[in-house]
Length: 265
Image (tube, rainbow, N blue to C red; front, side, top):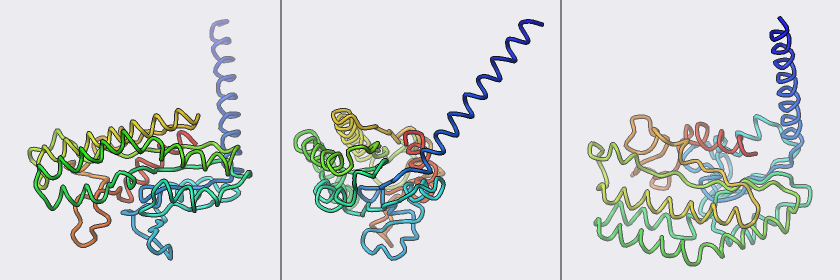
């Protein structure tokens, strides 16, 4: 009986602690001054419903907007823009922050290493051209990108010194285990593109660590929902709207980016 009483008491304490933690987290989220920065993976290109955001393609289904809808922060600055590079973060996005900003999310770096042109090469040209383009992008990711990421994260810290900065990465595009039955690019192309994503993500992770920011890895969240999977959360080549190609669908934003960001916010 005494053991049952002790167990019941411990259960009550644990439940109370959990409730307090949840309340504190909810209160912190509700009071957040939140800014969603970055490129097309943060603006929500590929998820549709872009409103009047023009070429920035800010979607109502983007993970940042979904988080703001769910947590009702005291302020929400949706500055992410399709095509953005680290220089855009420094010159136009970071200056929208202030000392009152408490939470920032960002994906950045893909456009700095020529993501769009690499994908176009792989889709339109030969495998050898694709591999060459990927190798060039990886070289750039390992040489110049670290400094460019540092510039962007330094700018965020300068404008929002008290903010929690969550740096998200990019998914691997293909489920290589299904490649043999998947139409489109060759398996060699797909292997190269997945490896390029990993190289890019490793530099993003290292940059976040250098600046004491939070790194949030989305790759495992897309597992089972990559291109070649039956329920892909990534657009393959869309000839009617090429810009959507290789970007998360609305399900990719809500099923992968949103929960990963929420777990780190």
